[in-house]
Length: 391
Image 1 (cartoon, helix red, strand yellow):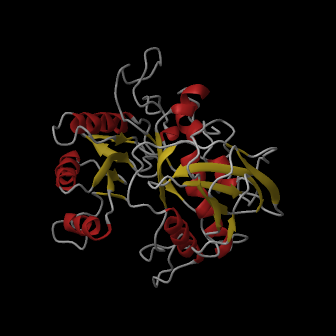
Image 2 (cartoon, one colour):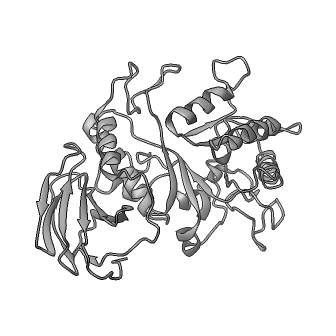
């Protein structure tokens, strides 16, 4: 869960105990940030230690969208409508140093600010560590973070309408992404074109998303929102994002505007997205980890560009091949081919529930019809010898 010191007080309604209780009751871990306009590093570190001691801490995060919420740090204003992002850079540098120099906190990763692509002057926030020769205003070797941080909402002025591969494109690390993606923030900044990482470096850059999501609006009805949200998690993970935080669990009631992003309505009633995601996590759920993950040889011949796949494995050895479509209209017929005949194949559809929809015995290939959502294929390999995986 994304959280931080904004609105945090000793008297509430939001206190540090609020988050400790959330962790105790639900197992939630927190990426803990300065949030919008925050600069109180001392408070961030002190409260971060409390969370760390309770094993409730996941990571630290820099400022939320400094282009929209400027800051004042050490007597200087930066971000927002100012002429320089130097105070934002200094604050992020100092946040990183404060975390990494603390014996309790040094093992936790630091995530960058969001929207470094909006820099008005080249202070180097498009890098995790500024390399030599980058010609930035902050010196080479300045360390900002361990992970790049994005707000890659799948609907954007450059991609305003429903279309094939919406979530797949938003997660694209290259310049092919049509939205506010990795390239526009860490490859070549979207506001002033400051050079960052090249294509090869972007492909392997450690990265997270702390905001993405879909509002119900216009052509996007409740079902389309639900399908997008299922596909977001899969596309992000498949394309290299370590964590993805979706905005928002329940519609907000404390501000105006379009508040239909939630998995839950303002009265806490679940939308289809909540049901679909619950079904998917229930199907995939596992209380343990595989000590030595195996591999599975499989192929999808002539795989359409709107069909994607992700191979997972349960602790009991069962493989879970998630295959999903991102076709706006129509469907794709595909064949899944395995190297050997497994003990069993069971298919699940999270848009229909958590019960098996189809069972296949004695075959090493089978057909799937894929349109706009995932199918989970549980494959019990049986006693066969392991093979190399497809990827």
